[in-house]
Image (cartoon, rainbow, N blue to C red; front, side):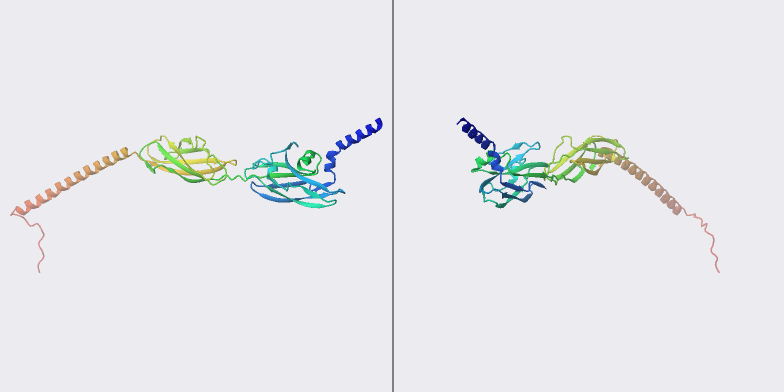
Length: 323
């Protein structure tokens, strides 16, 4: 009797030990690995073939879970959605019970739609096919179940594109310093971009006279946004034409934006004083020339009057030859 009890207890232990393997036995899954790559929002369609190689009918459930790079299983809440970092959430596969007759093969459609907010990188997930009477029963025997490993390489679709809409002085002519310059950028990309770099100023003979930070607040420009920035040239030497050179970089690849703007600095007080001085010189000269002309004219007229009044005018012209 004791021997019978020992044999029976050993049989029960063996059955318990082989229970997970029994759930995995008789099923083959191909392919074992699906490698995919795409951009956020891409939709990809695949298929997995499952065959019941056992001699009895089996009830199978598909279970999907994430797999970390170190092989750790991560199970999410099936009711949650829109998880940008969960490949399991991007996978669509029938979760209903699948009944396989002995030797039956079925092709299971698998869809993968990359989350629109997924960041670039490689994501891993597993689709396990587990035998069980119910889903809860099946998911207690995931270890050792036949499975397909899903690897998705998400590529970056980042587009960084700042477009210079204008760079000019506040006024093309200024009477004094300081002088303000304005540049305008439009973000035609799909991520925010922060321009950085200097605006360098040169005087009328080409000497650098200073520079300022073009974006001291490190202001980012959102996709589709247009933003203007104002910088100031505080001082200069004398008057004339001054030049400002815009030298911006932005983005991960250090894209560049370059442009030049010109401004004339003409102090109107000094210009007016010079103009009035020149005008005064011209007026004085004109008056003096006019008086000189009048003086000479009166002298000639007086001489002619005196000559006409004299009666003893002597004709000094040579006589004409008469025939």
